[in-house]
Image 1 (tube, rainbow, N blue to C red):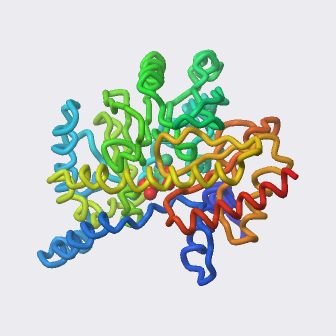
Image 2: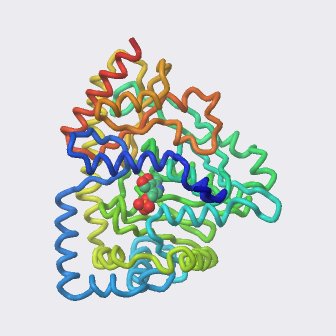
Image 3: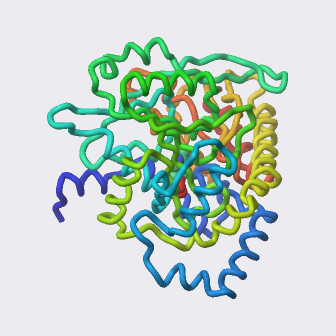
Length: 424
Ligand SMILES: Cc1ncc(COP(=O)(O)O)c(C=O)c1O
């Protein structure tokens, strides 16, 4: 069968297809798999109890049926949009109105819209999305309808300690290179985008770094897109002190996925009214309307700030605990090897750097998969970077810590065994 250029681009093997495929197969498999790969959130009992009770209430009072039996407008479920206006205005001084918010079918859907709105062909100029800190979220890589329009800057690698231990590093934005990028100087950047905390590394850009990015975006009259999938105020998987800012030039993307509701496919965009109008027009063409089920489930939890309580008392502590356990297990496995862990500052991942590993992390992924342990190799995350000459991009892996102690222990032991044999 022959497909169009669009068809060929969207049906080829991509990093995100491999990741979601591995994830689905691992979840459906009857053989034990140490699933340290995808970004599925953990099932946290204290959180699920609240969802279960809320669902029962919504079914009992007819809200659940009403939400699935009727389309919303292309902006999304009106009652939830109004709740979100109140919610954000209660917690931040952003002065939002309903014109500042649109819902999407997951935030992946939001990035598809935003990247295609702000990059690609602008009447003869090819504009790109600037990713200031590589590595970045693998799910961005293939989002353009036509071609690939990303520019990224290799990070500064700062070796550091963590909880008094050596063997850690932190990526920092190379602002000197960023400011002098020819594409930025020549008006070929359509928007800047960062995930904060960053998937895959668990890095949290500092407030100072965010202020600088915001100033660069303002100076070039382009939006700063902040992917808040793991950020504040929900699920709030952040271990550092940070603030979240919003202004007319900022586009904030939130998601219900990492609070434990990935399959309701609900994303939230907060932006100036012109962006929101564009998003809802795209919603109408691509989806008719965003799904309402997640909105109706979330509404009561946003109305009484339960979502914040769950984030602080159950979600954040769960991931922080698993992250600490995984760090300890990794340290035990790699005591005398040149293995470094990115300083864990948030999200649900650890990023591990096997310096001078004799094989690529893609090959390591394949060897581990054969043994029933899934991780994600690093190359796919260096979106917008030519990785052919960049060794570091082939020396890291991402591990999800959204797993039980048993799976983390078995999976990391397997990684230790395979990696030690490769170094030897
Ligand atoms: C950084 C980041 N952004 C966006 C998404 C997309 O999430 P969803 O479409 O489920 O909201 C993910 C999912 O893993 C992510 O990790």
